[in-house]
Amino acid sequence: MLQVNYIKENKEAVLAGLAKRNKDFTPLIEDILSLDEDRKKMQHVVDSNLAEANKISKEIGDMYKSGQREQADLRKPEVAALKDTAKQAETQLIDTENQLKQALYAVPNVPFHEVVFGKGADENVEVYAWGERPALSEGKKPHWELIEEYDLIDFELGNKITGAGFPVYKGKGAKLQRALINYFLDQAHNAGYKEIQPPLLVNEASGYGTGQLPDKEGQMYHSTADDLYLIPTAEVPLTNLYRDVIVKEDELPIKMTGYTPCFRREAGSWGAHVRGLNRLHQFDKVEIVQLARPDQSYALLEEMVDHVKHLLQSLGLHFRIIRLCGGDMGFTSAMTYDFEAWSGAQERWLEVSSTSNFETYQANRLKCRFKGSDGKTQLVHTLNGSALALPRIVASLLENNQTPDGIRIPEVLVPYTGFDKITK
Image (tube, rainbow, N blue to C red; front, side, top):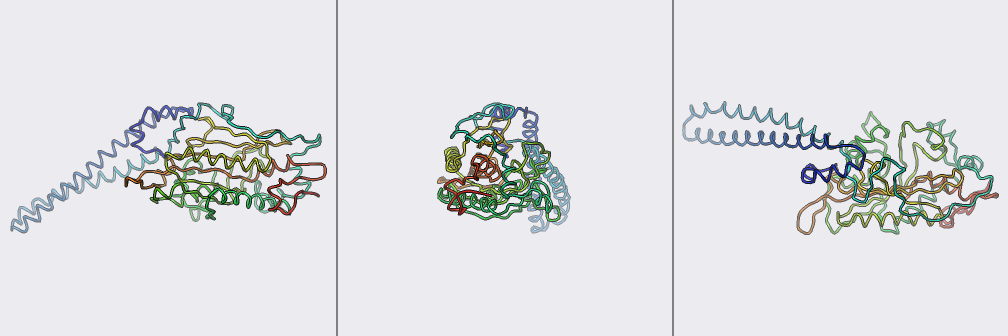
């Protein structure tokens, strides 16, 4: 979330940036500044009354020592009244602080200056494209038909044991999944990311730390008995490893990667665009996360973009990179690049990665800071990216590499799969 002092010192710039999200945040920002003033006044009442009570208590103690017992007893009600006033103000202070926190939670991140105005996906900016659309035969099939034909994934069996959106991977379908995971992890390791295997459930504090709560609460699976949430992405546990931590400046950037299943309710999703692997409730993903110095974070964002770009090129997928406009960007992001792979049989783009810089937005919630050479502490910048999410990668690979006698496996994956073609 944004810092109150930053909002106060940069009010006009904050409002101008938030306007890119196609909503007037002026009333909310004014409420935040007003609540902060109320908080300061109440804090002053608490502090001044307690200070005065302590001063009089000391004077009463001196009176007792000098034998002025009656005068000392007469002053005791003063102390009680001051403490009572302080206690009432402290109750109001706690309530005001909670109101202020909830108001700050309702403010999204301020878009980076390169982010353009726009209401939705149609106004995103294409910044890069690679490869050509595959020339497929007239009888090309979408991946859900290929999956059934080659017995790779069973959606009906997954629906039987769990529900829709929880597929069962079988045979070469399961091996392809494992091959992609291992390949992506190896590539992340080669790029200097430390592999972490985190928990798949997180507590409420972790959800608030990275901004999934309260913004995306309805999209997360919640175990109410234990008040734990199934992770929507490895970003949540990986970034929360550094919640309430002060790192040394020379430790930055901190680069982490992790493979996890991801769980998303995706409430309200239906239609042809979510058929097959296009949208699932459980899917596998390799994530890359960085904690960085503020002056280095945008250079590191480009480095992460290049990493994802390399993965897609090595798989031979035709793809493009989109810089999201303000109206299409996630709540916590300052700037986001989406990667879209071409689906040869569906003849449309499929989002396969989202790579973002959150600047200090998550770090302020996490209280994740670093100590500079001057001895002062400041918030880190956090970044993350999908490298990569598997379902739509698999969908694109199956569709784009189909031939009359089987489905070709990209050369870089053959050492991981042990086969170069999927046949019946």
